[in-house]
Amino acid sequence: MQIQISSDKNISMHSKLSNLIDSDLKRILDRFKDEITRVEVHLSDENGDKSGAQDKRCRLEVRPKRHQSLAVTNDSSDIPTAVTGAGAKMVRLLVSTFGRIEDKNRSLTTRASGEGQNLVLKPEAI
Image (cartoon, rainbow, N blue to C red; front, side, top):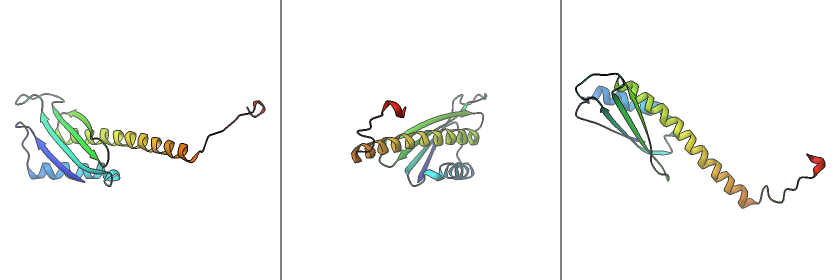
């Protein structure tokens, strides 16, 4: 799983922040590491030079293998919290997405094998 980090001109990226983001996302997304090819992190300061609550934004875009990319956004008062929040949202989205894909594949397999077909309920069984 490759992690790419970019930021707008209002956020000072340095190695300590970059390493913190990289290690947090690897920890948060660890259970999906075999299913994800790349994670793109886009950091921005929505108010620019002005200060304000919830003005730091983290947008995560994840590229799962054999699937379309998924994206979430989280706003916070600081970058590490915005990244952690976006990571938590991404985990929920991945669980939901992979769950639906698994259910769909299970349904196709069940239909192909003929399971569940020709089921007749008799009134006395109800």
